[in-house]
Image (cartoon, one colour):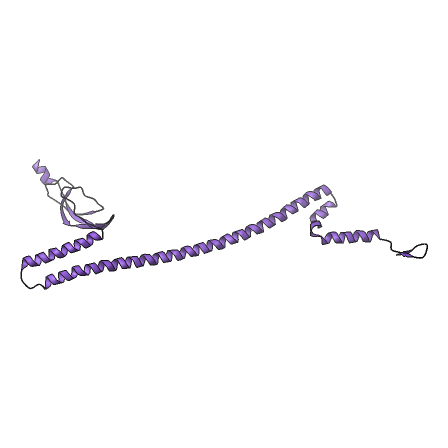
Length: 217
């Protein structure tokens, strides 16, 4: 503040004060804020300071990218946890449904076998003394049981004499003298059963030692 020749007070702007205010305004603007490291380097080398500023800018952008990626990873992890939970629930439902299906299948089979048992009970209770009648009743019951097995896909394993043995379907009991070729089935001791491709019980068989076949030669 100064007086002019007419005694009027005139405001005189202080250059240093103006520079200070400009610096303050620049500091308040985020886009014009410089990096402290770049500012210090600029005191010695302005070109190098620009490179430092670029590196710092790249660093800041990378930091933002990392934050975005971390958020994305967290989102994927949450989605994965939901998928895993859904899959575990699906496995539990599938297992429960399978158990219920197997239970119903077992109940159905047992119900059908009850009729077979009833027929056997009636056959045993027959007091007529007629052996032929009793035999006929037992044979009828066996045919009924065979129908149940057939409906369930159960097939008998009873290899013909002279056929090759199958270690997966036949259980060799012993070797006997037979007219059949050596190593082939001589006789079925006890038939086996299979259901689809699964062997429920292997057939017990005897195999020929080939002695009878050799004597014939």
